[in-house]
Image 1: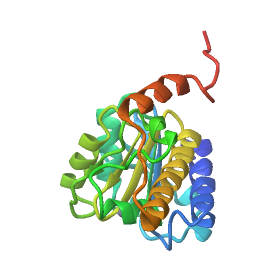
Image 2: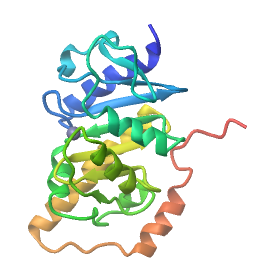
Image 3: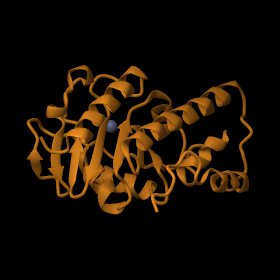
Image 4: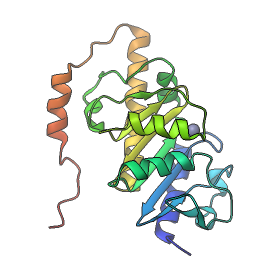
Length: 215
Ligand SMILES: [Zn+2]
């Protein structure tokens, strides 16, 4: 089996996303890139029934290499991100409730907490485009420019990372950030942190929680 560790990690991540309520049913999709291959969740399989063998392996042009089922309908989104972001090793796409709710309300995630700094700048909301389309993939790539997360308008959230653990963590933090904003704004008008403070925190976070350099 190709990419066994990546496929096992994808199964574990999907089941954790499901347990945490960040995806419902068969929604959302997860991929890992290794070299010129991408392992990605199949379309329409409930995560409780997902096994490493059912996670497909595709080339960066989308051609199936070892995939018993049809790939996620958002494979074009994942491939477009890998094409635009050579440093990306994993992509997590969810329909987590707070991020999805905020994606229908805002053009960017308001800086209600300093965690807004962990995505490389304000988290933007990509204009709506129909799921599974190249238009959605292009829209997401634009919103992700210089960022490690974005929202997809009226749809959900996308996070990227050098590895799956990082992309997964970012999806949890992004959902939390959106949830905090929705709670605060439902009770009043939240004070927002100024851009200069977010930039300063981003500089401070650089290196926080990272692996030590290998050389
Ligand atoms: Zn989706």
